[in-house]
Amino acid sequence: MQPLAQYQVLPCLWDLHFGDGTHLAGVYLAKLPGEVGYRYAIQVMPGSVKVLDIHDDEIIAALDAIKVRFEC
Image 1 (cartoon, one colour):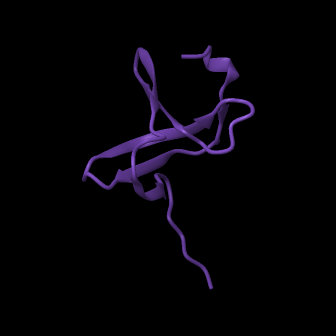
Image 2 (image 1 turned 120 degrees about the vertical axis):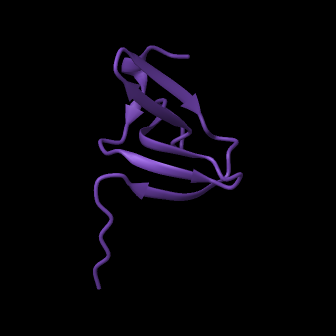
């Protein structure tokens, strides 16, 4: 794991739903400099921060945890 300050983090929370039926609620997506895709999920909880490597998991849905809005 790299120092947390090195990760490039998207500034909104996401709910990730995976092909195996599991999900992560309210996580930030992150990547390291030089990487193309966001392969990490950062989960912030009272008293701890977890960095989870999700690049091998099949993400079937990524929803904005605050607001989902469709416009024509």
